[in-house]
Length: 141
Image (cartoon, rainbow, N blue to C red; front, side):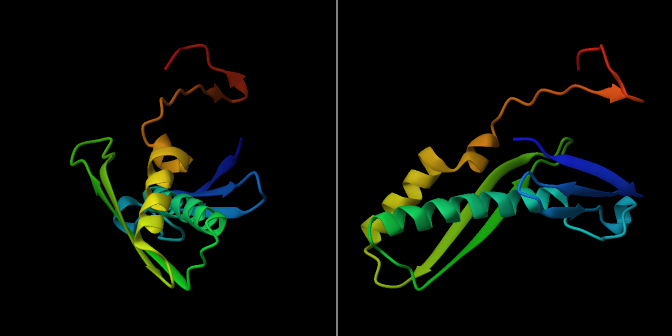
């Protein structure tokens, strides 16, 4: 998977996802931005929710269960010191419908422990490279 993100001025960036969707990101005004888009950290929490939500719906449908409604509240705690990474992420799942509790718990566990690539990626090894004025950098970062 590959994506492109371009600087659009000040602290704003525009990304195009591999599926063709545009994402605008910006910093808060107190950080030099204009609040013209979501913060990257906000997108990360939403990505965790979207990923696990898709998993749970797929799993429940395989169990022939159909929620009437489904909502998640996601709360992330961040470290005080830079890089201010997320130290804890809590997801509260709220489902309604004729859903046996044990089946819902199983779907949540499968998403958390096996299927949600976004939450599992929070522990990913991140490698970086760079180019400057079109020339690939040679220093290892």
